[in-house]
Amino acid sequence: MQRLDQDLAVLAARTLAGLPDDVDLTEFANRMKQIPPMVMTSGLVATGAYLLARNASTTVEDPGSYRAVVEALLGDAAGFAGIAFDSDDPNDIVDALAAATGRRYLVAENRAKLFSTWLYRLAIARAKAAASASGDGQDRP
Image (cartoon, rainbow, N blue to C red; front, side, top):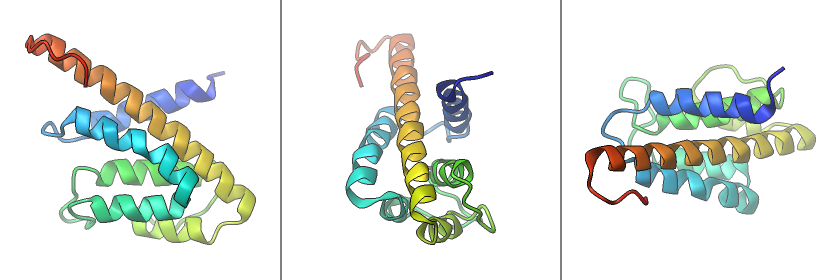
């Protein structure tokens, strides 16, 4: 039986692997580091809406670099909490989260905070590894 942390680490690794090669991992890590306090302050629905607004594009035809992360973060949180949503469109997931009962919503919020923490940890590790491999001497993002 896997621990919750192992599941989140695997999901975070898969999500990071799906990012375009040109994504700045340090900037990405900084954005992921901001998610738990944003969720605590504003809630998951507002944080999801903010992330969607920050994304260059939220259309399926032209996905922005963070769309996959927003989809994974919101979709995993909603799914883990047992909140049903009709499609993988992150806007639909935000709507489903907004309509969720209090307990399920809180579970989804906690899951999103934990998942974003794993995304941050892995992005930092990969940024440090990339900096070490390139020999630029800046191994601290």
